Image (cartoon, rainbow, N blue to C red; front, side):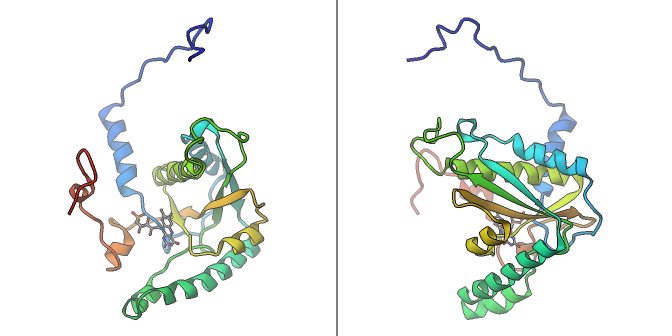
Length: 231
Ligand SMILES: Cc1cc2c(cc1C)N(C[C@H](O)[C@H](O)[C@H](O)COP(=O)(O)O)c1[nH]c(=O)[nH]c(=O)c1N2
C-alpha cells in the first residue's frame, strides 16, 4: 500500500549534478588523507564559522527515518577537558593491562588522545528516544540510530580534513565517567568523544600502522562474492 499514488502533487527529484574531475578528486583526497590525530594539535582556536561548517556537515548525515538522533556537546573549558583527561588516564591503565604482556610496552608508547592539547573537544551523542517509539527503518534493527550517529561523525571527520582541522576519536573512557562529567541523561548514548584542532602535519598512513601496532588489510581480502567466503 502506498499513498504516493493519491498524492495530489508528488515531489519530483532534480537533476543529479555531475562532479567535475577536480571535485571528485577532492572528495577522494579527503577520504584517503583523513587521519586520526592525537599528537599534532596546534593551540590556535577554531573560528566559530569553521566549527559551524563542521557541525553542518555532521548534521547533513544520513539517519534512519530522518531521525537525526545526534547532539553536539562543544567543550572548550580547561576544567572539563582536564576531568576527561583524568578519566582517559584511568581507562588507559585498565586498557593496557588487557593486552598480552608482550604488547604492553608498545601500547605504553602510543599516544592515544589529544584531549587537553586540542582547543575544542566534541561529544557526539545519540538520543535513542528521538522520533518517538516507532521510527521508519528502525523497526527491525534498534541500533540503526547509533549507526546514523556514526555517519555524522564520519561526515565531520572528512569535512575537517578539508578545513585543515585534525580530529582524534577517543573511546578509551568509561561510559559512566563520560556521562557524569558531561551530565548526559540515560536515554542518550555518548557515541564519539572527539578532539579537534588545527594541524600542520599528518601521517601519510594510519599512525598505528606506522608505529607497528596494526596493519591495513588489502582491499582484495575484504571483498566476497555472492556469499560469505569459506577459508
Ligand atoms: C570508533 C573509533 C574509536 C577510536 C578510533 C577510531 C574509531 C573509528 N581511534 C582511531 C583509530 O585508531 C584510527 O582511525 C585507525 O588507527 C586508522 O587510522 P586513521 O584514522 O586512518 O588515521 C582511536 N584512536 C586513538 O588513539 N584512541 C582511541 O581511543 C580511538 N578510538
